[in-house]
Image (tube, rainbow, N blue to C red; front, top):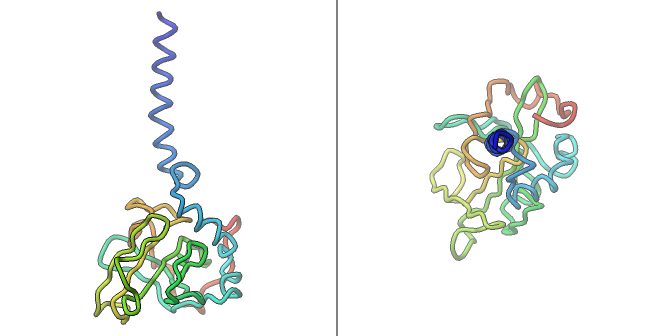
Length: 186
């Protein structure tokens, strides 16, 4: 009986540690299908020069807001507001400046309400959020969905604001090195 008790306690400890480690590490266990699709579709864009070559352009600002954290620097792609919702064609790439370099954080899908019929869009089981007009972006009413595929978000993979993201180092596009960090990670 003395052998069984340490084994059971050991297993209980492992069962407590593994979920905590997975939550902290983020992407390999517990990833959603959409998060995995975004990672596969955007891994080359960890190097922002590759994103630029693919037609993505900086919107020239780092978005921080009324809630904790930020969204980062948005790079709009050639698919913006075309009415096509595909996981492998994000409308916006989200970057953060850290150490003078841009680091890919995730993506945002955007669809203006004008021209969209039916209920709010859904992509791979994730419903878009409604943003009314007027809004801080100067757009008409739109639907949006964030996917934090490259940087964990304590508020959740699909939350708008990420408290782990900051605009503190953003000084404008001209002051940013358009190369990814070694290993491409944040």
